Length: 244
Image 1 (cartoon, one colour):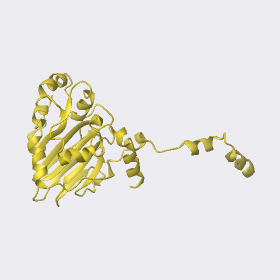
Image 2: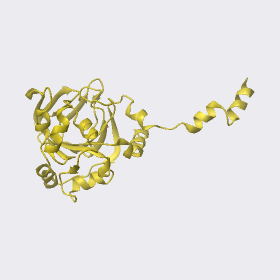
Image 3: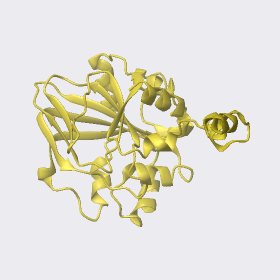
Image 4: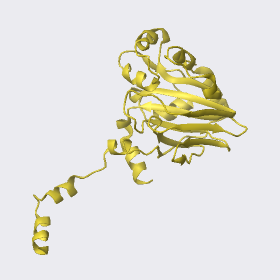
């Protein structure tokens, strides 16, 4: 029996040899694995506060307008001391509104992906802005659906929730810790707290797992959400998964 098995394994036509030769890590296997986060082999630079303030002032505060179109806007008690801006997204809100009125879903990234080729999308910060240049160092604009910039002030919080989606409840967006002072927490139910430090970039699953954010510190927490075509950074994702 042992001799026959060895002969079978040496055959180029054996199923086992075929599997061994062709087996490889697939992007969807990582994204659909159920893990709540994956630390990426990527680091965000330490931007001066003037650069961060300029990004906030130059970008578009559309999140209140998004909420006004939702069937059930978040109650005021859901968040405290939280604000969001759009750095990259639909260029013209007046063109965008008629498109999303019929959808009535609380899935900004999903809507941006759905209408990405139908409408003009653009950056709302200058081409030479350091934040934009950093994102473009690993992603072309054509691969980006939405880039948002979220500030959570001292003693701010976001209550436990999970985000709606019309797509897969997988790892889905890049979460870059632009400013992460002591006292910040990003918790995932039954998984503990994501081990985030300032400068880290994670891929997160905010659709499947209930999660919350707390800033117990004295300085604002700033993160950048990058929603994109993940196939364009699949080498980075696979490399990061293998190094985890």
